[in-house]
Image (cartoon, rainbow, N blue to C red):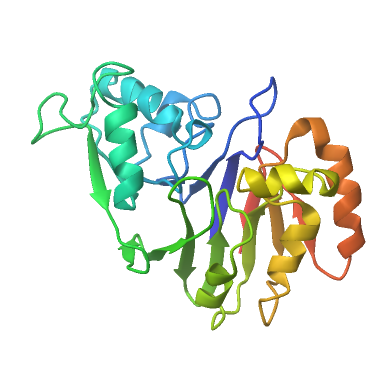
Length: 254
């Protein structure tokens, strides 16, 4: 299992891309930093997108990717998966013929470039041998993370989340090979993190302590660049875990 980090930043600044991960060249998890990370040929390989929630930094490049693909005349089709609430928001507020053309009905509804595929929390879809299951997390809008399984290897990507004991209870029977989890703010901004549905390092490791056994490797994403050094210092307090803060362009191998 190889996952390329297209974007792992909690803010959009030069040289750092918004959240997006590419699995097996064809499967995206979130779409914040796609079109400025992949060339046109690489974009044309994408067939599936799994969205955690409808905040702009996780869906922004769906319209631009669609625009690039439809102009390429390659007859590309993309399936966008998420829970009903997320897909409804994308349809209503993003692909609505006002903010951007509605590629769910272009060139027509039957042959549209984008197909919105509803998936219920706890249900699974299997694509190219990867079993992918949405699991509810705690954010300010309806949101899920995704459990990815292949060949007895398990990865869980949380997307944005605040403290969420129910999530870890749902994963309690699984020995995770890797956990990709956010830590947006330093510990000194704990109250802001809780209010906005995010984690600090201390909140993060309080969550992880629920998992038995702990994940073999923990990858940190969605770090706010302004606070990166403070977050790094806060994370050092938890040296008992194997931890890595992600950077754009890296590849996670599981």
